Amino acid sequence: MNIGVLGSGGREHALCYKLTKSKKIRNIFCIPGNAGTGRIVKNLDVDISNFQILYKEILKHNINIIIVGPEQPLVDGIVDFFNQKKILIFGPDKFAAQLEGSKYFTKLLCNQNNIPTAKFGVFNNITDAESFIDRNKMPIVVKADGLASGKGVYICETKTHALNVIKEILSGKFISSSTVLLEEFLSGEEMSYFIIADKNGYKFFGSAQDHKRVGEGDTGPNTGGMGAYSPSSIINNI
Image 1 (cartoon, rainbow, N blue to C red):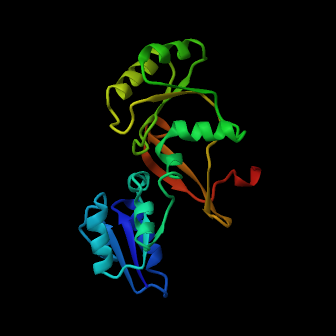
Image 2: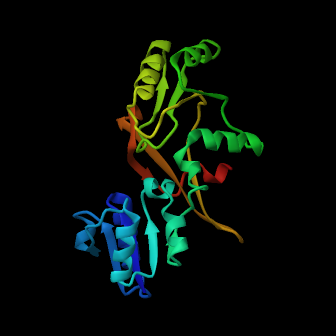
Image 3: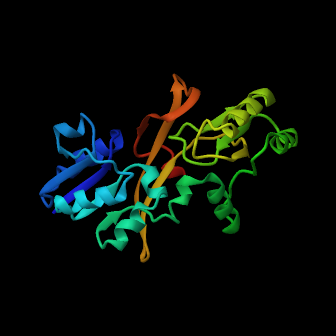
C-alpha cells in the first residue's frame, strides 16, 4: 500500500513518522513535505492547491490512500474531488469542512442542535460591531470568521482594543474572512476531544490540550500552536 500525506508542517511530519511504523505500508509520500519529512519519507514537490496536477502525481506514484493535513484544501473541496476520481482520501468533504472553515457556520450548527455555546454576533461593518460591544461585558472575544492559521482569535480587555482588531479583520488582514464574529468571553480550561466519523458512526480518537499563546504563562496573541500534550488532564472530569 502506498500512502500520500498532504501538507508541509509539523502535523504532517508527525503523521509520516507514525505511518513509518506500520508494516502494511510500502511507500509513504509527503506532498510537498519539508526538510524533516524528507529524512523519513519521500517528498513530492507538488502544489496541493492544484487538484488536477496533484491527481496526475497520485496516479503516477500509485498512491492508494491520501491523508489531508492542512485545513485549506479540505475547505476548497479536495475530498469531493478525489471521491469523484474514486481514490480513497481521509478527511471531511467540503460541506463538513465548514466546521473548520467558518466559525459562523459552526455557531449556527450549535444553535440549531441545542449545543451550548457562547453568546455571539456576526458583523461586516464596524458600526454594528461596536453596538454589540456596548451591549456586552468586557473582555470580549473577536474572531475572524474564516481560516486564519490559528491566529484569528483575540481576547480583548478593552473596547478600544476590540475595535482596532475588528478594523484589521474587516480591512483584509485575513484574506479568507470578510466578516467578524464577536463572542462573550468564557473563563475555563480548554480541551480538544477528537473523533473519527463516517456515515455508520464514530470512534473516539484521543484528547489533547493545546497552548496557542505566544508568551510564557499563556500570554500574548494566539499562534497556530506553541505546544500541546495528550491526553488532556481534564478529560476524566467530563
